[in-house]
Image (cartoon, rainbow, N blue to C red; front, side):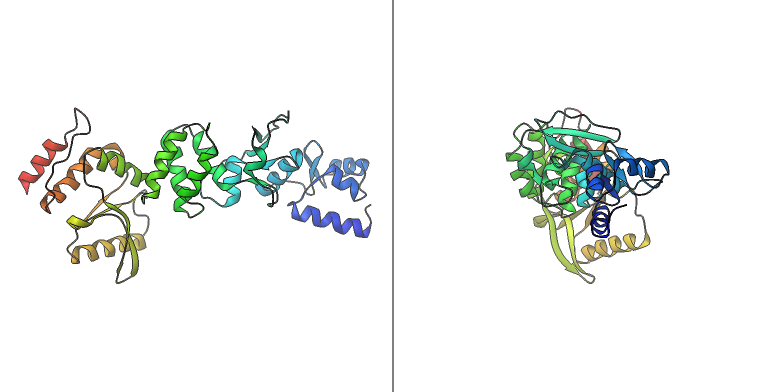
Amino acid sequence: MEGNESGAWFGEVRRRQMGAFTRAQANAAGVSDRSLAVRCRSRRIQRLHHGVYVDFSGPVPWETRVWAAWLAYGPEAALGGETALRRYGLDGNWGDAIRLEVPHHRRVRGQAGIVLNRSRDFDARVVGSREPPMVRLEVAVLTVASRRTKADDGAALVLDACRQRRTTPHRLLTELDRLPHLPRRRLLIQVLRDAVGGVESFLELAYVRKVERAHGLPAGARQVRCSDANGIVYRDIEYVDYALIVELDGRAGHEDARSRWRDMTRDNAALMSAKPTLRFGYQLLHDPCAAATQVAAVLRSRGWPANPSPCSPTCPVQANLGSLMHLN
C-alpha cells in the first residue's frame, strides 16, 4: 500500500488523468506490479493498454480513453486529427477512435481504438502546454479536411471551423503555407479565400460558385450588418445596387417556431424597407440554375442591365428567365 504522501500524489495524478495511470506512476507511488495484478483480478482496476490502467471497472468514458491512449505512447505523442477537434470543442461527428501524432522517427504501431499518424514536423505542429499535448487547432482542421472522402466535406469543415469562431480564414491560410504537401491544398486555399470575402458556410460557398459566378451574376455583399426592431442582424447576401437580399437556410427545415418567427420578422423588415428577400436551402445544390434564374429575374426587374450566362451547354437559365419575365 502506498504511503500517505505518495498516495496523495498518486490520487492527484489519477484525478488529473481522468482515472488513467501508468505502471511507472503506480510503482513510483509504492504500488507493486504484484499489487496491480491483484487489483486487476479483483476488478478494482482494469488494464487498457500495455502498462496503462484505469482505477475503476466498467465502461471507460471517452476523456479517460484519450488520456490512456496518450499515456501508452507519450511523452513523444500528441492528440491529433478528429480527436484534437473534439477536444478543442469544435462541433461535429468525430468518431470514437483516438488519433495520435508521433514524430516520424518513432517506429510504433497502433493498438485497438488508437490510430497513429507519424509527422516529420512534429514539434512545430504541437501545443505542448496542453494536457495531454495536442496539435494546433489549425493543423487539426486542415489535416482532417484534406483526408475527407468528399472534397465538399473538407470545404464544409474549414468553413464550419471559421463560422464557429474557433479560428479564422487568415490563420488557416497561414498554416497552409507551412503544409506544402497537404492533399487538396489548392482546393482549401480557394475555399479559404472565399471565406476571407465573407463566405461562412458550405451553402454560401455553393451559392457563390454554382449560382453567382457560374451564371455571370453580379457579386453580392456577404454578411451585411444591419439593424431592425429586434436588434442587429446579418444578411447572408445583399445586392446593394439593386436592393435585393438573398438568405440561405442550411437547416433541415425550420426546426422550431422561434426560428420561423425570426426568419419571418427579418424578411418582413426587408420588405418594408423595399428590399425583397429570396430564400434558398440545400435545393440549390441540386438545381443551381433554377436559383440563378430567380435571382436574375429580380435583378433585371430592379435595373440590372445584363443577362445571366449559361453555366453549361444544357443550362436553361436564359430560356427560363425569358419565360419568367414574360409571366411578369
